[in-house]
Length: 432
Ligand SMILES: [Zn+2]
Image (cartoon, rainbow, N blue to C red; front, side, top):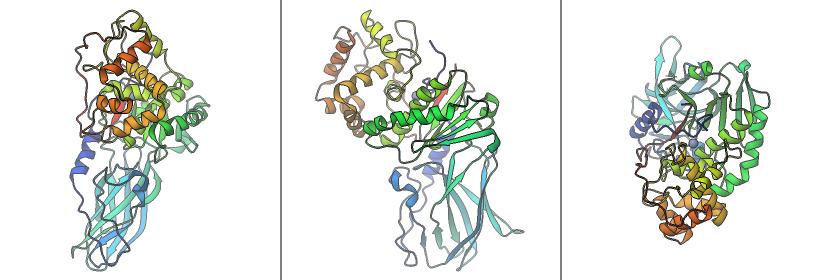
């Protein structure tokens, strides 16, 4: 049964990911320390992994050379759905401004940037982002100015925090807790926001135990009531059937609600998608892995299921049709099972994690995810945590399910992988 597709991961590299890779490639020169500035940090903004997420916006202002810098009349303007812009009057004591750029960030470890242009009539520099990457409303906007003068001095401001890319506020309601910020478009049931807060509170300690901590930022859930307004911001986002996208660069999840009901949305979809945000923050080097591994993992955090996933897999086991999981390539997330139903990777992946945390605990989940990295694959990490061989792990899992202990010949479905260097991940949910 496929009543909706939050778990239909479409492994396409979207333009925003490519642009962010380009930003990463445009290495911002590490700035040498200047005697004029107190302990500037020569950190590299363009390297998403170099700065600890928890300290990400604490990075102080820094400079090279001996100029004194001023940034005045600083402003941020939201032009939703057409993007946003930054303006300021900036100057150096040692020369004219040769280059002014704004770097912005919706969530730790992710940023975009645009050069600013100078307006002689106002004396202001303005940096414009025109929604070329398709940015949803209600993301946080933190930003810093990067300046160079004609004498070659450079300056990088501290992060200016707390702006928001806003849509018409009369159409939206906002709900906040320590776990999440929820934006609910007019037209959704009135308990949508509260249900989402309740679901996130209920999973808080599970997330914390499974990952070692909660997210370093409050994620945002942006919930649209209709397709027309959902499509307003989706420039260059590919698949028109998508009903939701989760992107670590936004620090949030965006969904258009298509009749699945508030309980399913709050206690199923949101918890699942937030699970992907955890994956991105806590396993940046190790994901993406096979799609059953990250979709089954996100499914582990759902408190409402569309149907009984475990029973479906147990039925496969009972009929002697349970495919191999760890041995061989394993199922892709949405492949069809021997029972004729799709979502095989979601369901087998979920049941595998369920078994794993039932036997070894949520702490073992944390150990497993901490271990994953470029040089340690999923099975190797599993072997280290359990002290068992992959074959033995598969055997025990199958036995727990009531299947024959020996896995059948691995199914010949190639594992779907993302290019290993792409970050952040975008997890679209499709309605096809
Ligand atoms: Zn997912």
